[in-house]
Every structure is written in structure tokens, then in C-alpha cells.
Image (cartoon, rainbow, N blue to C red; front, side):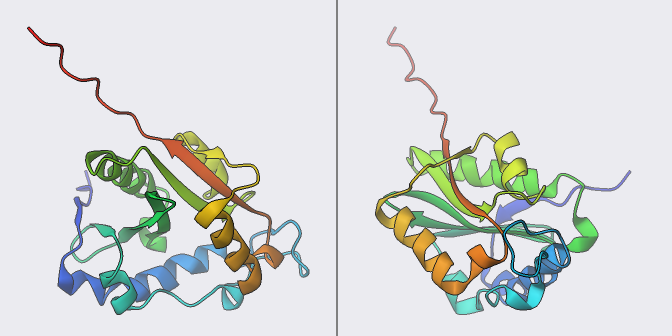
Length: 182
């Protein structure tokens, strides 16, 4: 029985490994059908480059799975709420539930920090994107405004919408009810 990688906060020495992990994870999108795409498929060469170690170090929080990491979740803050900026899982570790464990850990971290919700932006029709996030409790945000709307506009300017339909999503975080007074 294989040992599941431990999900933990990233250490400084993990950050240098994450850009290559993100690039490897992006290869999972290569050749997938991309509705709305001019060429009909998502191509890895068309995605923005992976985050740099410096960008990851400046993130609100980064969680990793494994040592060395085989997956990570980068959390930022958008509109005063947690935002899952990136979720990457190594192709060799994909399909084993690691992405779900990272998302659940990110949601738990955000709730512990006092955030009321977590947002993200993703491809709407890629099975391990929006359909997966729906199973984690995320719902589509119609006509996002504020910083989330500006983030979606930035994605359009980067050309991501030409690769396939994109959607902003939000998950309301569960908060433990206050303990009743004796």
C-alpha cells in the first residue's frame, strides 16, 4: 500500500521546485478538447509561464504535498477573500486524490485564517478543472465584479479564454459554530 504524501505548508527550499512542477502539471492540458478554442485543443505552449520562485514566496500561502513536492496549492487574496491561484499535481501523481486533498487543505487553511470564501478561475469544461472543483463545493460566479472581475479580464488579455471557456468559481467556507456558553 502506497503512502499518501503529507500536505503541509511549503518550506523555503520547496519553492525552487514548484515552477518545474507547475510546468509538468500543465502538460496534462496538452491536446485536451478546448471548446471555443480557435484550434479546438488546449496547448501547453499557449499557457502563461509557471510562477517563479519569487512569486511563490510572495504568495499569501503555499501548501505542498510530499517531500519533494508532487503537488501544490498557491493561495492569494482577492476581494479580501482567499483565492486559489494555482493547483498543480505532477502527472505521475495525478488521479490519486492528491488534488482534492490539496483543495481541502487550502479550504481548511483559509477558514482558519478567518476568510469567508475562496475563489478561483479555471477552464469550465476540462474534467479536472471546473467539474472537479464543483465536487469540492465551488459554484460558478456569474458576472464577477471587483478584483475577481479584473482578474478574469486579465486572463482574457493573456489569451486564456481563446484556449477554452473560463469560469470564476466561489466556495463558501464552513465555520464552526461558536461553543455554547455553559
